[in-house]
Image (cartoon, rainbow, N blue to C red; front, top):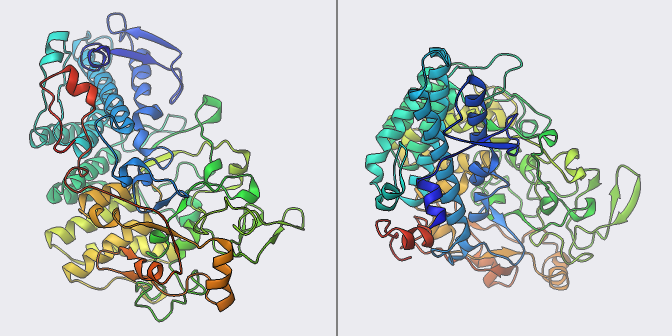
Length: 563
């Protein structure tokens, strides 16, 4: 009961002296909002990480087929989520905290005397709060469907009587908030100013929320509004863009900043190889690995350029920037999961060391032989990382625009150009240099849909975008019902694969028209090992459960089907 009253009845305004700081003090709504500083502090609170939990530490990537974690399966792909699922509860609570705080800011802006804030700041602060509110409501609608919707203060009686509002009723209000934000937020911030939500972020996030519900006209319009600002461009180097040392790139549209000085950082140990002090707990999946096209633009099961014994050769350059190629130096040590590579070179010392990144030496080395490269830099060796949380970037906007064109069947040169810009950047060339990369020339709707979906997967891998794509494309019922496979145990691996000259995988897996990879044939031949099952339930899991506590406290809050 206390939790529900907190969500819908009592508004706390938490202040922080800098963006992303933990709260240093709290003020009630009765004595807060008396000057510009206090409004700024209240807005800062909306940038704190816990309100953006679905974007932090690969959180939703773990629910997708881009992720492997030894013999462990997360509840969502394992099909075991219920109304007491902790992720459903914590995200519900936190999104409503953010909404309540945004509402408090907006309502107080309308109630204060005109002399407290100049109209310019009043509009800008309301725009920022409405951007946040729209984002939180949009994500709630995507995850849970119909949800309680309110924009004003609620007393306790109102809180206990509120029910779920149809999402089709909520969406126009979400779009209205984004439109207001786009009108009054600046295009850019000046030198020395904190980088906050902008006009482009409002357009781009409106496009994303519309994408979640397949509202293609809105996706196209909002994405084009963002593109036409002329403020953003693709970072010249794909791999470099994700390093924590890359700040203020023209590709970044919206991000939550981190700083060790402001007590905002995280530990990457689970994703580091064991040779450099990591645990190799989780890896990019084989499904992701085989989704990267060959350099002729064809899937690996169709391209004559692909050799399963040299799986990184002749592949889209983003593969080597996302997953560490075998035999390459990574963080100062050669990475090689081959079972016969029991010693590897430490480049920093010039000496050979025992290779803990092969399971023939260390049984807890990567179970599928892969390790993450994207975003990983030397500073990860410190075990504390403060790279920004990138929530929206320009490549995503280009691909949203292209997808809307495809689904509306309004395909033209701008559609192909949007995809080709993203693909050409991966090859380090301009999109006009069509002979230097596999440019997209096809105009068939069905073929372009397949290309677009593959392009989103490889471009946005391990950026918390794959889960939403699987849900909205209704592909989770296929992708998340196939088992997780990995390498045979070391003795069998040598006998069945290595000694027969078949390393890495002996044959090419099948890839369907949706870009989903099927390894069942290799398993049936005893050439790979089944690690864990996936059990997505399509009757219920396309929506998350409403938290059990909420349905028990308020009889007007109904549960989603089959939970």
